[in-house]
Length: 437
Image (cartoon, rainbow, N blue to C red; front, side, top):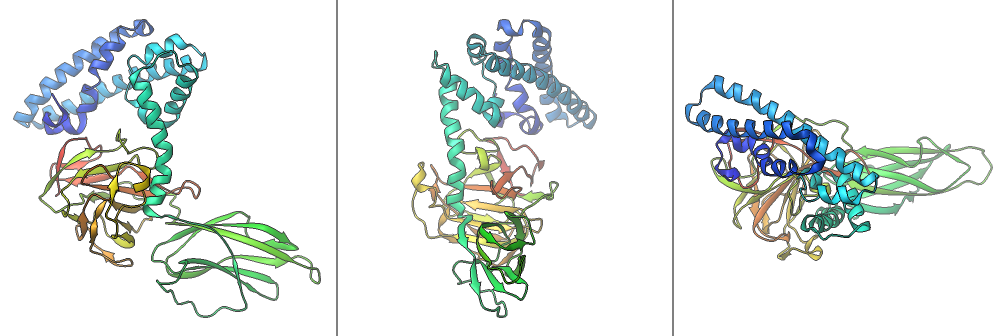
């Protein structure tokens, strides 16, 4: 039975657990797991019984049976996690002990979490390349998968043009009243102004988005910075802010400084609203198939691992998932393809939310942006039209929510919940049709 054929309760909760049955049966045959036979037998029996119970629940809708089912599902999850932990421990041990035989025995039955755990994935690939005495399809695929992970950071930076590279701080004789100008280039500037005590450094942000900067000093002679360098901090949109003072240490003695800054779109977010319930990015009442969800095996890796791809005909209206301000758009591109050269050719909309998170809507149609930078939008509002531009193999809509915890890593996708007609969805399932509520 495919995931999309399960009852709603299975599609949302049970599918990943039931799909492990075959893997666990195969693992039970390996001599490394001879002491886990009882766990495997119990898992098989529980899965079969719960599948039968769930089918009956879907017909009866009995609330007590549903409650009991969910309790048992948590027990099955606990047993599943115990078996996975045992597998992971054995896999790490084979790598640390340089035990090639045990490693390849485990790779005969690779569990899905290997592809999700970035640290373990890298260790497995490195060990495989250093001890390549068998060409197993999974390991060859995992090696390609890791290479794609490492490229995905560069792809997304190109796609959304997030960074402003290192620039020199410019000197001014005096400051005029700050008037933000959207046509200023670059949008993010840093200037220094001489004072009686030294120099004041200001950040001028002409953009409609918050920005995080990193201030560095190449040369700092006879001057003391009021902040520890390098200095990283976030500043609001369309504003001028004092970043640092450089005070003269010894008057009458020559002083000199050479400072640089780099900027990145968005503000540092230590906490965000993890309980927010997003809308689906299409018209209420319409349904679209989720072709790739969180940790998708094709392109949802690394920075973009918590992304959703919905199959969508070109020209389908795209709707905002949450209130916010439009901070970036692109609509001129016409090309698409599944190679790096198309990474920077996606049409998109970026919307910043009140908690500092940002929503990305990608692969939009040529001319498929209906909003402008700086515009406030409301949840469910139509903002554009889906397409097939950029790093894409076919017509679909890519969305993800990002937050920036680190300047060096930049915005990273984060898990989020959305509301569908069937209810709250916390763990989206691939190939399921979701209806916007």
